[in-house]
Length: 246
Ligand code: 6PG
Image 1 (cartoon, rainbow, N blue to C red):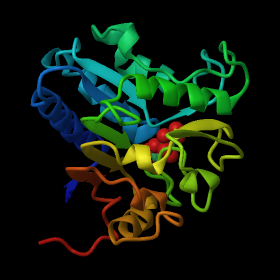
Image 2 (image 1 turned 90 degrees about the vertical axis):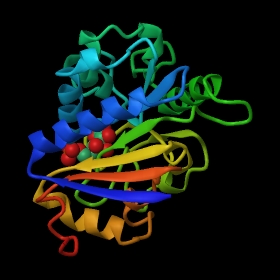
Image 3 (image 1 turned 45 degrees about the vertical axis):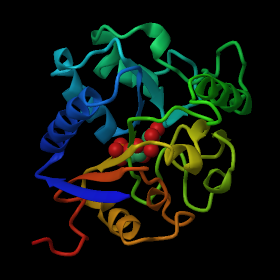
Image 4 (image 1 turned 120 degrees about the vertical axis):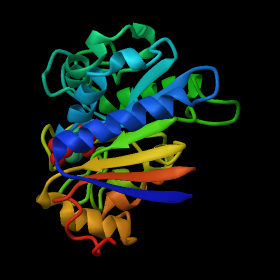
């Protein structure tokens, strides 16, 4: 498994680079559906906007969209990662609504039960998985990174960090809103390519610890790795604690 560290000048150039890579990566997938996983957070949404600016370059009829985590709030709540993705990209492209795989909302048919929402998401992932596997072979799985090293909604020393299921409920999350649904480490590493995308000096210590092999229980961003490639997409500030690069 290969690791690539791409360092760009700032958030806009990092997002533009991620869009470039997204278009190229989705285009080179073998025939059939192309499964991708999106992330919330400021960097993740900026990347979706950058993809949206070039959306005509993507064959949306092939794309299936999932989320690495979702805030467990009512469907219309602006905090929902899927709502922010709709506004940044999905509402503006010709993707089949059935291929947008949303996590159940707190006011949805499953009720205010994040465990039920996590189980239902795992079932949906399984329905699109190759025989004998629990989820699709995601072409690209995007993740953000928190200042203390969280990724998706897996926080340091949290139950989610050791949850063996495909997806899990997260309660009392340090980053609001407090209740979420998250894919777990095994699922996050089911992707061919895992992209950890973050910007800003506040993320630099966690980025350096994750790249230098920290314990994923302490720095969850150290956990997810692609089957083929793990790509770090960073601005100079987020990369500033890494060893000097030639
Ligand atoms: C979420 C995200 C979360 C996010 C990081 C980074 O639902 O909040 O999935 O993992 O990506 O917290 O967020 P920022 O890029 O805004 O710092």
